[in-house]
Amino acid sequence: MFRGTFVLIVEDELAIGIDLAFAVSDRNGEVAGPVSTVDEAFRALADHPVDAAILDFELKGRDVTPLALHLVEAGIPFVFHTANALPPSIAELCPGAPVLLKPSSTTALMERLLDEIGKRRPPAD
Image 1 (tube, rainbow, N blue to C red):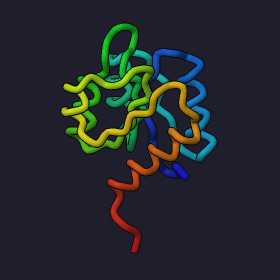
Image 2 (image 1 turned 90 degrees about the vertical axis):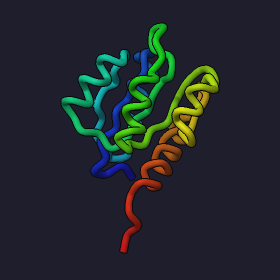
Image 3 (image 1 turned 180 degrees about the vertical axis):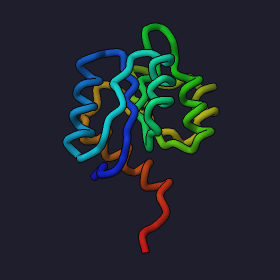
């Protein structure tokens, strides 16, 4: 499913991050992370070009807005996986970005991420 896809996982709850990493790996994807801060996420992006990302919106008291905006500008698909609804200002800056509220199943999250990736890939001949 994720064959050839490098996914950045940004999650400050270690157990959830590991669960998401296993879910991507089990679907033949490659994983950057999980990382738990925005700074670590930017370092991971510098080390590994990524094809997609899963973002927890609130990381240890800091939101991921700078990272989300970078991904939007770079055309990298992502989903928010968060405990709370996004603030309206962020929803406006990231129109159409899926938001899955915790707890959500890894299956639903992987399917939604695949949908987002599919929107950006050219159709197969």
